[in-house]
Amino acid sequence: MPKSDRPQTFTRNFRWRRPAGQAQEPATVEVVGTFTKWQKVPLVYDDPGQIWQLTLRDLPVNRTHHYMLLVDGKPVRDEQCDGLAIPRTAQEAHYQLMTPRGPRVLMLFAQTK
Image 1 (spheres, rainbow, N blue to C red):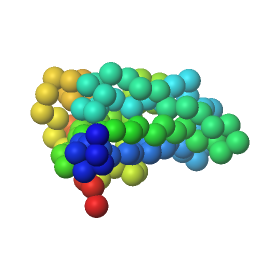
Image 2 (tube, rainbow, N blue to C red; image 1 turned 60 degrees about the horizontal axis):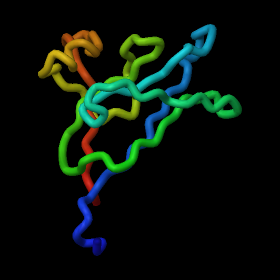
Image 3 (cartoon, helix red, strand yellow; image 1 turned 180 degrees about the vertical axis):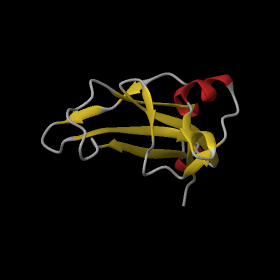
């Protein structure tokens, strides 16, 4: 298939580091979202870097995805997210994060340059 005929896709690196003051590393860090059909995908722990990370490729482009990072099954804020959105579906409500402005999920703007 010629390059111009292939659908454009987006790659995203997810990273999470244990916050200062948290005593121990969690057992699991996962990402769920519209791009995983709300199925949990584990991040991998890099011991030397002391960071959890995952690269997802071939995400659909030119749309806004909703997602959450889960640390030991609990939603946490991703400092690299593109914004916060009000949950729209039952799946999003299941993984929502409570904020001072109410329940929210994380946003990812998957756009090509």
